[in-house]
Length: 197
Picture 1: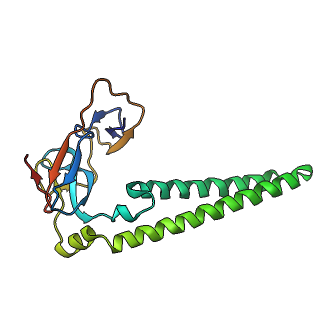
Picture 2: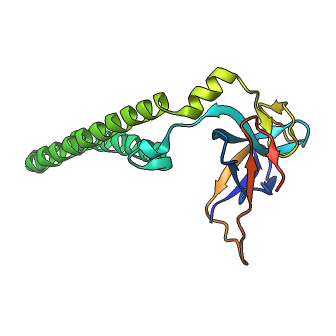
Picture 3: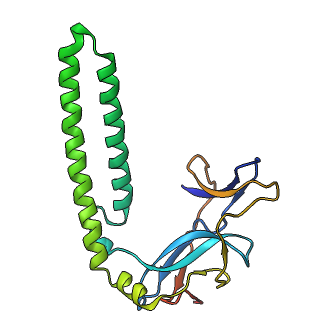
């Protein structure tokens, strides 16, 4: 289970984001907006923010909402394989040249396949953004971002800890959460206001 932590760049400060298990979804008649964790000036802590920006039409994408992660993963693999080729070229020795040649040839083939996949994913993302009703709606209506907890409209871009360090959010994959977890679902409208149910 992923949990989100707030950490400080200067000291050992650590705290949890309380609603990292909360799922914010638009009411059925509203358009989905991008959401992010920003440091709310009114709440004086990181909260989930409605950004007033549309999202791609994920149903059209090969990997749905995970397409961005697959894209990042492929780009990282390409970089790793290119670095491997550079390393093999440096270590080439007379008896191993044949082995090195075939290894580099295989790596180049894998890179080509990954680059084709990246190109396809980028094209799908571009098309899904062009066809997205929510991107069209939010670009036409220019709705201001707001905190989904207090409805405040002011956030701090680079929040500071009292020690002077910068606060930042980190995914904490290593933390085990014990007990029964209930994922809370909170609805918002297309203006970014939470709907009380």
